[in-house]
Length: 248
Image (tube, rainbow, N blue to C red; front, side, top):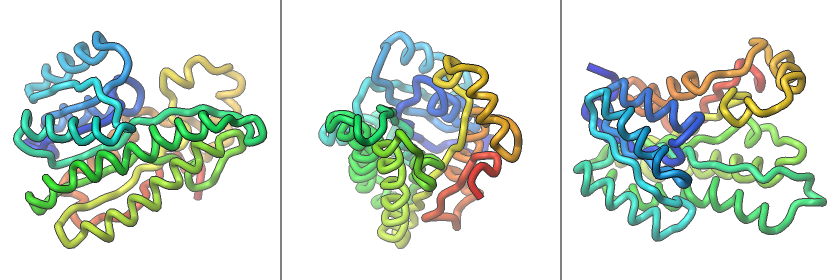
């Protein structure tokens, strides 16, 4: 019996990196997994098959959570296909880095919509089902950049900081209905995105972290298992940093 046996989870942006690691870890812990992807249908299908191999129900949805109507449609489809929704994980996110003086309005709007508005969209859509069940766990993936800020990432930092305020507000509003809402703030996590960067630069980042290494997607996924499971039944409104003591 896994820590998430019998629970249904919806994970946005699960085709690669952290989202993919969360989906796999959730399947290993016995959760039925619905997930979204934006790019290739083949990748979505492959992940669906990979998750189903753990003996759980898995289904991928090609959906853009930054669109209000699409998010509502998505949640309704998941609830009708899986018979409910116990855990919502907002992981979909993009970067459009640039110094503020060079940042376009489009680069600002796109990041705010995909990273922050999507959280509003999916949580609003999922609330009815969770309130009816008088149970639920919401996990929003933020970032240490949302806590500390980062030059060249004003849009990304604002979106991730917004997620923190949103998470705490949702926890206050829905606590009486036994719905918990927490955020996970990864630090420097080594994924496909970081693999293409200059090795010397990456090593410099590793050296600046007290634990002297980047994190693995699995390590973020483990925190999400804890926050989605009954092990964290009295934890809500918190931001859990998974960053090797980068920000203390």
